Length: 108
Image 1 (tube, rainbow, N blue to C red):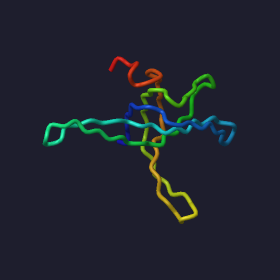
Image 2: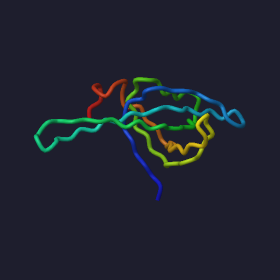
Image 3: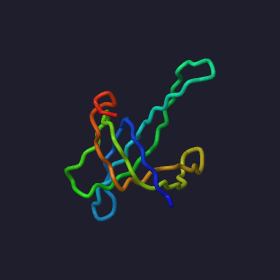
Image 4: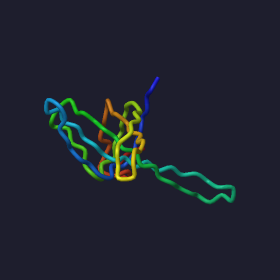
């Protein structure tokens, strides 16, 4: 099974159109985690994930600053850059829900 569920803040977005004018929204999702180290101090780190979403309707938007839930499949592929071939990991989202405009506004 290849399934992932993510919740985080959208950092940037880019709308593209593929074959047959299918709309794709590419966005970077940042999730933050916190933990306590052995001295009891709270530490945090963030993870940035590239997400691709093909919305079923044109009225769905994803904007920087949105707090989003994304569900989909992990996909890896290689692309050619000036440094040579590079493998990238993406999440192809099958479901996206806007939870609020910032993490602080959500009830979780």
